Amino acid sequence: MATGSKLTQLQASTWQLQGASGDTFTLQVAGDKVAGKGGCNRYFGAITQQGDGVLALGPMGSTRMMCMGDLAGKEMLYLQKLEKVASFQISGQQLVLSDTNKAALLTFDAMPAAK
Image (tube, rainbow, N blue to C red; front, side):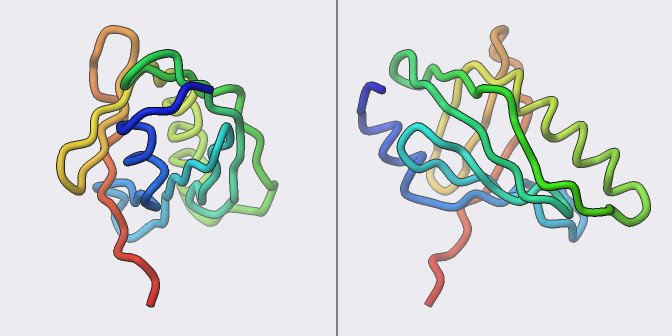
């Protein structure tokens, strides 16, 4: 995997999905792996950087905990969107993941570092 300042920025934080209405959806990148919390399950997959700000996320796997209410549907939609990601942009403390047409799929905020 290529290295670069944008990838370093991506790996430097744990990211919290905006507008998750109190549900926890996170994203963390380490090396060629992506993982996080997708509502009620943990997910994981591969990430390949294909250029500066251009990447591909492999098929996502996840644990199989029972989700309450409509959280299962939200989680499925979240994971489907992750698999469509083709590029990312970081501006300050905000991460936007976009598809091949540069349409924003998911927007995250950097989480404060644990103390």
